[in-house]
Image (cartoon, rainbow, N blue to C red; front, side):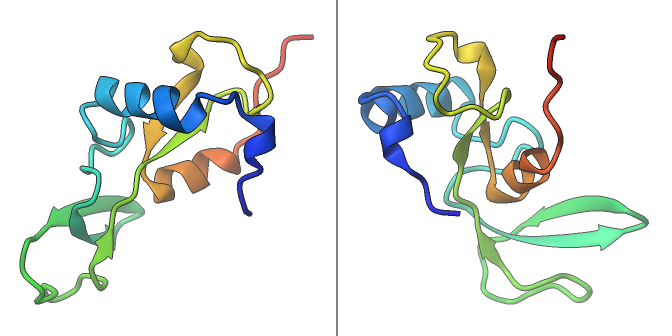
Length: 109
């Protein structure tokens, strides 16, 4: 789904995203892969194992290489919540972001 930047604060791309990526040391805060790295992933016994490689050859049993692009995820699933607390934002790879987007948010009644 395309991002509607009208829902985000004006400094989203210029200040907030760089600050969250810096806090995360430019790595996914769930699985630990580094931004802009090419990796191979292998699924075994319902667990994901990450194999990082700098070569073009795919190891036997692994999927093709993918380039990691980190995104900033709203833990409350609400891009229009402009609360300045960084605790509601996480740097995630696209795979982890997709998994967490499909989880239902916990709402206080």
